[in-house]
View (tube, helix red, strand yellow):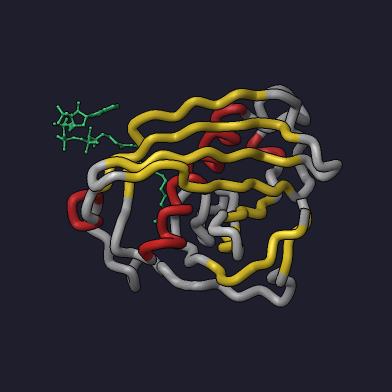
Length: 168
Ligand SMILES: CCCCCCCCCCCC(=O)SCCNC(=O)CCNC(=O)[C@H](O)C(C)(C)COP(=O)(O)OP(=O)(O)OC[C@H]1O[C@@H](n2cnc3c(N)ncnc32)[C@H](O)[C@@H]1OP(=O)(O)O
């Protein structure tokens, strides 16, 4: 299925998943789709392994967590932020290193205090490698962190190969 991309989310400086200056991080890029989903693209490397050649389950969980947690920004931009209070991940296939992976996240339920969502990691052959359910508590950003957007380099990073559509 082709997903039309309607926008790109911001990256940060040091977040493990989206920090562009975190040398050991995933440096994932996040694209909002026409269908209100969020797709992360990232390429894990040797430092992200568990068994040799296999992505660490905790790292897979981190990218699923962030992709679902960021899907709320599709709707509210930066007016609503969440902290994870529950994450359930199922690992269905070994996830290889050194190849680009696609992660899809979406919000499935929301009230004034909590939002919930689901997500998946897809291999290059289209197989679903991991699935997740996450629950997030809405917390004003000033209660989560001392977050100065400039200092944290919170901005859209444009790349020449940013896609207009993503096939999964
Ligand atoms: C750089 C940019 C990147 C930007 C990237 C954005 C990415 C987002 C994705 C990544 C997000 C993360 O990893 S965040 C990091 C991981 N998560 C965290 O650090 C969260 C740690 N937990 C907390 O801070 C706290 O527990 C809070 C804030 C969630 C709640 O604390 P509180 O405000 O004191 O409230 P409290 O009274 O304890 O609870 C309020 C109500 O919620 C319920 N509640 C509390 N915890 C839970 C729970 N785990 N599961 C179910 N329900 C719960 C309570 O029973 C209560 O219900 P009642 O009695 O009122 O009915």
